[in-house]
Image (tube, rainbow, N blue to C red):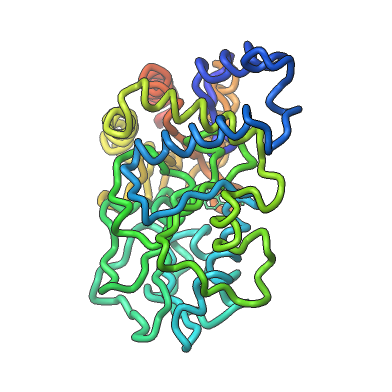
Length: 365
Ligand code: PLP
């Protein structure tokens, strides 16, 4: 197998893939693949309730928080959030902290359903989290939205934003379960599975109970959190196989030592890369401010702050030849991006860092 540094859908733990392939034709002596099972069967109910119990266990989720497994991805939730929460206050306005491409997309979607107040000064260059003195909160905001880890720009929060009691809504799609966090500080957390906790198809939504019941009438029923909570995510057919794979990953995380272990590992991996970038005398460029550097996605340029196209092309070609794939930066920003989700091992990361050292030695002018 190759070493997959993809930003998502991303590498899965090999143990998970092995178990899934072992059970592919005959899950738990049912004579069926999980893909062929009714979502209302006893076997699938057990898969789903075990996944929820493991998630609750990993994050210490109290009973007043509900867990949903929905379809539609993070992008579906960009609409579902305003459709469910914009109405929490009559002004129908929400605060959005935009620190990269994904929170920007979420704000654009929210504009369809209410007013969006931009908390941070507008910019096209996302390289950090602007200082507090520039923030502008709306006094009537229904909720404050932010993205904990911007997958394209590599900007990650190192703290939970303060909101003065306004419900905090967070997109954790690309750093979910890569470190412990206190769910009680949040109103809603959403996360697509295809980076840290499984394959594409299922999106986790964790919502505080008292925020249910404010849904706008135009909300599609599959995105109505109250309806889906009432029906245990089974209003319509849930993404059964993706939930099964997520369940295997959650179990793997527990076996590996839980979120503390994921966090420790993520720090070792990210430090190995950033230390090289910082000691490369400008050969490798990281544009993100040190206090906002992502542990999950590391965008960088080679040969200068704008990147030298021939060098970056050569880097991609040579890494591919060495069995390391998906290192190209997002098409909107170019350059290189290294994604280091939970399933990428320390050894794999160090292998890439060694390659990068050699590449620098050969190609530095
Ligand atoms: N939010 C973040 C942080 C993401 O990285 C992505 C996708 O990469 C999304 C949302 C959108 O997810 P989806 O493609 O599942 O709609």
